[in-house]
Length: 263
Image (cartoon, rainbow, N blue to C red; front, side, top):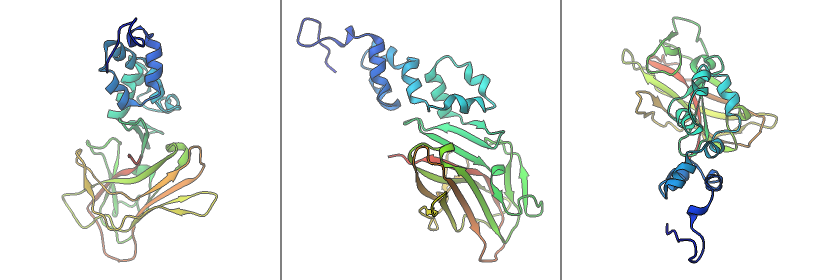
């Protein structure tokens, strides 16, 4: 970017108040703001201001943080930028430990995960079928380990306006294969949007294979749906195999994640 001196054609950006530059940066996005911070030291200072990163945080971030077990720690962070990056890099636990919340680093869009305890798991309270364990690699206190069932059914529900702003959203369960047993995959699955109108079927998983993540967990996309901002509908997600009659086991379920589709 060429910067001209005062007195030449135009005006030097260096004479603009830092607050003015910060205001302009706040109308961009997290990625663009960081790129523009290398223009000059003034841009760098403006980019780090709370006025910029307050705009990148969700409007209801304070009420979300208030319900978190990390609320005191988050309140002690030195800047809004630090808070933003913290929410991107480490999900916080909310709703009495039943859900987690985080942000997409590039866009600031919301991500939620419903823990296994927040899901309806058929026979989930029967120890001969399912076992509840702690797992050091999980963000939640407990995960559900499938011992052996012939009727596999896991369902989750969430309100659109609770979780996601206007966006295309993906519904994705996070699982692990238990090394002690490997008689289960992720069979027939789907995601449906329920509300006052007729249910709108999302794109179903057509026998996709689970994708390995960098943290040791696997994930598979159930489907996509579009949620209008403020829309009061209930999303129901499911993973099931109830027709074959085969016994299944060896699956560890951490939860189902709702995250925005990028691009």
